[in-house]
Length: 391
Image (cartoon, rainbow, N blue to C red; front, top):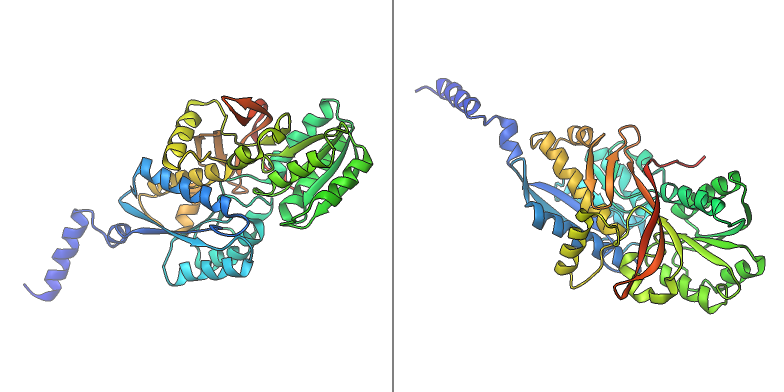
């Protein structure tokens, strides 16, 4: 057989067997570059994300639509955007990842965004929560939450529940500023009065001077946002400085009452009302199964909202890859993700096709004793709540 005829016959055979060039490529592993802080002050975030990704793959397999999924974990330390950017560059250029994921804090997500755009790879933001993150790259999709999304319902609840005056107290970076602006806007529009707005440096070791100013202002309540990992220090100093004894209530976003840290926070959290999109105490059968599997696989570690953002990030990737038939082209994967909806362990969720942000239920919770531990028990909710953004 001459070479030309051999090529034609081989090509016809490949087509007949469904083995086009695209299908051959589709059989290659799909690599996911997972960038999270596994060390440093926000190591609890990385630990939760890594555990959730591993659990999802244990439960759902490591192959989807004919593609083996390989996760390459990188520790960025959670502090330096330059480190995150370098890791993203290395993952794309050297390791040839087709998806970037993770991102513990907003400045780190910002740093990686241009890499996703240049490489045309989807970037699944599982954790960082500033409203504008998806605007930094057309390839970003968020499976965690935004601070405005979980703050607005709490501001509205406070105004309806005999809280007439508030001091806002937030960490001074993107999500904190988002939370402050949205809380002030919604609380004042509902008739409440904001007496002062305080901002503390990120990774601040001593909140006492700020809490002293809160105590002097004598509000009905103080609204608090600090990133996951900082809540224990705030709650301890809130109690030690006598704010609770002075009759000042503490209300907060769920970051402050991180499920992962609740055992160490303990009784200091009791009675605190917070708003968030996930609690380990969420009563759905899906969540009960998730919590049981997670704690069994991770030496009784309690899953938190970062774990759920990661678990759903993998859910989104698997579903999108099934939809594309295993095609990992960045634009096609991204298009498949837009508008996707599923039943998460936190409740029904979907990806807004216009903003690429997650749409979900936001719960109002109260910290209570449950079966010997302190949990955030949901008592109210706002369903299908979109990120309200910041003016």
